[in-house]
Image 1 (tube, rainbow, N blue to C red):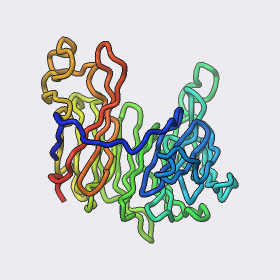
Image 2 (cartoon, rainbow, N blue to C red):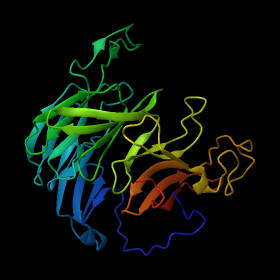
Image 3 (cartoon, rainbow, N blue to C red):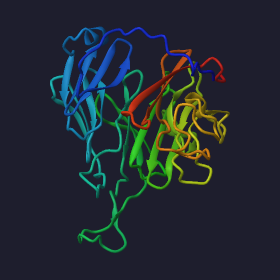
Amino acid sequence: MTSPAETPIDAVPAGTVDTAPGTVVTAEGTVLALRREDRLEIYDTETFLGGGAPLSAVDVPATAPAAPLGGGAVIAEADRIRSVGADGGIRWELPHPPWLGRSGPAKAPGAPAVSPDGTLVGVLVPAPDGGTECGEPLPDGLPRLCRGRDVLLLVDAADGRIRAARPLNSRASVVTQRWHPGGRLLGVSCWTAWYSWSTWWVAPRRDGLHLRGGTRMREVVGFVPGTERPLTLRRAERLAPDDDRDELAVHDITADEPVVRYDLAELTGREPDGPSDDTDSADGADGGHRESDAVFEDVCTLNAGQLLVTARQQLPGRRPAARHWLCSAATLPS
């Protein structure tokens, strides 16, 4: 992969909109979804940039991840998945055992994933038994619950019927799902405390969900344009001796190891084992981690030839800043 890391991106603003405290969560084709604290708004993109009103708006619980679906939304809550229409009316509801939460209110670990054709929804739910008592009670006297393995469900977007289910070796605190544009594969990444990411390539078929392969310590972020090769992002979490680098990788779903790795330190101007060009070398002069290093957040496939890599960075004496790199996908293997 090549990147014009030293060249500013030639971008022309299409418009600015005061969305605070809203966040754009999806933007596909001519439709854009904006998440506010307790509402998901669906816009025509040009109307949004012109400051116009949304096509529809759906009320959602503030802590519940949600994804747009057919003018409404599909919402993942602590003990159920539900689909609502543009008027807020419930289309269908799928109850499940509650997620366990000890440090705060229980909530789902991530948003549902609607297939490209809008007919299926991928959701992660706790194991059917929900949890069993194990070990000594907690200091507050409550029973200590142990979770079983999480279960990936493929749900019919029209009526909420479970079309397929597959247990995963995960007890996720965070989940990321990315569909292949053709709907042939679903990449699923689950982050578990002290174990980092576990990722699987899942093929939906008439007879169920088939695991085609997977990887560890990497989060799925998409697919190489025009191929079935997944893209993953590895962050330097430092949970293991070799967990010391940020990396974008390309995978062949039939192989255990990535076929291509790209060290993201090259984007920041920092040598993979040396100090950065744009930060004070006194902090981490030995090439180790520094608080001023960029924290890579996501990689977005813009089109068949370009990727957008995003990060946040806290430089000494400055406010936190978002950073973006426009990268060419031309040299990614097809």
